[in-house]
Amino acid sequence: MDIGVHRPGELSAADRAAWAALQSKAHLGGSPGLANPFLSPEFTLAMGRCRRGVRIGVVHEGGEPVAFFPFQRTATGVGRAVGLGVSDCQGLVHRPGFTWDAHELLRACGLAVWEFDHLAEGQAPFEAEASGTFPSPVMDIDQGYETYLRKLRERSPKFTRTTLAKERRLGRDAGEVRYVHDECDPAALRTLMGWKSAQYRRTGRSDRFAHPWITRLVQQLFHTRSAPFAGILSVLYAGGSPVAAHFGLRSERVLACWFPAYDPAFAKYSPGLALHLHMAEAAAADGIAYLDLGRGQKEYKDSLKTRELLVSEGWVTRRHPIALGHRARRAPVRALRNAVLSRPEFFEPADRALKRMGRIRSRN
Image (cartoon, rainbow, N blue to C red; front, top):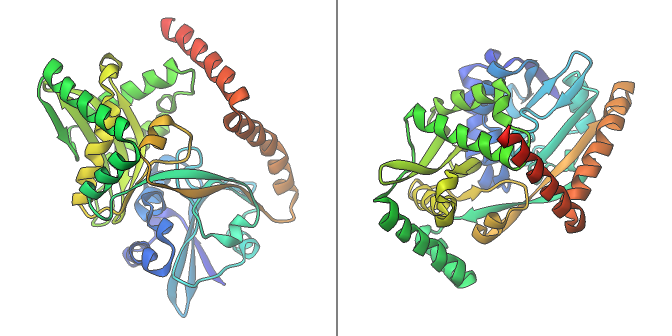
């Protein structure tokens, strides 16, 4: 393979256009997952402005770019998917029919190991070394919102009826309900991040927005616009005040759900569910094929989903001491976390303990 490794700022406009074109046509070549906005050049460029070591391996055939491999690299050759821990889709963006040798790719990129936790489906050379595969629920809206809503009523009539009724009651109690699909007010984004930080603390989870680079990343993506890509802030208002909001990323065909949150004072109205239905309606009108709700078991995802994608986690490793050491450190942590998440007898007491810690932390 003819592979060149570049810093994000070194990509030419022609390279970025070729990358975007591969994503735009991915569904026609049988790889619809490659259209995910986390695999867009804009996400990698934003990561490059917020984190060190971001690189892109560009594969050429006949002088033309046929594949793009974004990654983060340490000085010792440890590689990670770009945005590992916050990115919900990872892999190599390529033209239809392109095949590659994973170890040859790593060697060309100067990597001893490459770690991923949301590998897109269909990346066979990487999947061969995956340690686990997990569902990522989606809401299909390619046939229009009314079709989605009709099927939701057929599958979950009580859930649909209750969610819509709660939104009507919200309007009666709090004032006119108004939805803005693409809110441009930075104050609304700050409100969302404040809600989300409080939610993380309340539930005993690590507050992502306590990491300045994640805050910078979200703010940059909020201001990022191109023909196929945008950061989208969606807000549900009641009586002129925000009650629920979501920030995610949009490509030509996919709206990737990322940071949803709501004002706990309005929890009894389930404003987050109403927000997702409004998002689906507006996204369908924009020509989006589906909303990717992201890996992770949540009751609201099970209620809203129409099907599931599969994402993988694991490592691709070369014969190298650095790779062996990295995997030895990381594998037990991942195995323990996945065991807890997949077993109710482990997850439920752990979740209760985290929430108790969150309540204590919130009071201090």
